[in-house]
Length: 378
Length: 218
Image (cartoon, rainbow over all chains, first blue to last red; front, side, top):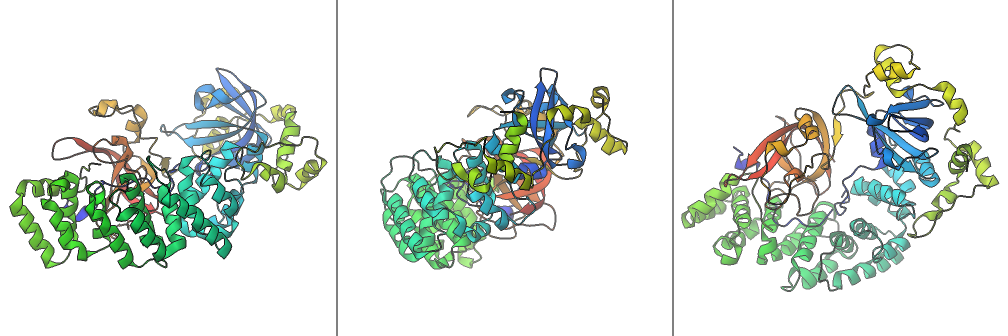
């Protein structure tokens, strides 16, 4: 039985957002992470390969060098190797081992490389260096023409902490970022990070230019889901602060015509600002902005959870009042309301919960019973 | 291009040459094979110059043989036969096994009922293993002192609740005395993985994976 004291969660309106960068969708490890965790790895050339076994010449050991002869040949049974389909004799490749599920045997994986990606990996900074010292190297490869490099460089930033990314902001190519954020050829998944990165500009000139680009995106009408829009909003709020929040309020938060998806993105951006943007926005400003979402059933549940976590007990009456409203009858909202009331330390919250229990004992009981794993609707 | 020339060339690329395709999607990257500058830069590269393939054959030593040598404290074997017989052992024993939400994925159609038998063998084998899994903490009513939370694939609404894939969330209970704070950032959770069913009041599955959390790293 899961206790209510443990309950965090409702899922209802988590939306598109993303990485360490809370606005990226890539949780996959970068190549450097993969190699750092690999018991053995090397840059190799394929010497031979067939259905029985594969042989590789080791050009540069990258991990477990003591087991990888730097001038030797690695021989693997074909069933030990994943990803051999793209390999051919003479091919350059990245070869690495992972601790297999069977403890007695390693599993090997290989990725074909061209000369450029080979050099990219060979020259990559040592993973043991502080992230801020490594990120500069990867900044040059964002949206590189080689897709492997472009994706890996993005993953390095996506997996880095926001503080680390902020520290290397001056090394980010702001001109290019402004182009990429509006370029339909750039993968949508990366635009959340690029939006955030634009918000980190250091010079007045870049900040002005970036704000203009981001505001244009904020104001652009959208009929469809906008991947990375949360990052755009996050970057915009970093640059525009309270003034930007007021603009966002008019455009989205208080706009009854605003699309649900955009509101979810806005909620994600507010969460981000609550954690990282307190120099730009006060808690009271954030609370006020988030309260707007209580008017929208499709995002109310997540807003209630956030308000509870932010200890915005001024919303107590407004939150409790939603319980009786028809358009807020979804189970996820009831669960959020009950969770909020239980999290609130004010005596009034306990009284309101008792009142709701009288009003609809079954609905409150169901919400309580769900506990941590509250089913949430969307 | 010969193997040796190709490697020398690419390792010799100056930073500027390597960046030739940088930051401009669609710009082709070219490597100048005949570049004297590249050749001279190779000698200054921190990367090792590769040995000739022909020479390499003389140094054949299989991975498995080396692993056996590392385990047994003997010299590396050099024959394929020895290699075939030798078990491979990770050189980093005791470290958590890195898994991703992709590792936990299995064929399950939307609205299809879940049964344990639908799990793949590789997922079933994870039961009881110490793993490290990266994901996001599902927003919680508490900011700090979380002893339990749900780790989801990403911050999108795909990952929990009705309509979401069961393999996209993991219930985490921190070990006694350990807690974590809510963050919008992705986190890496280390702990013991377990197959455990969580059902809602209606009897439907809400989650099927559990982690006994040892540490949450930001």
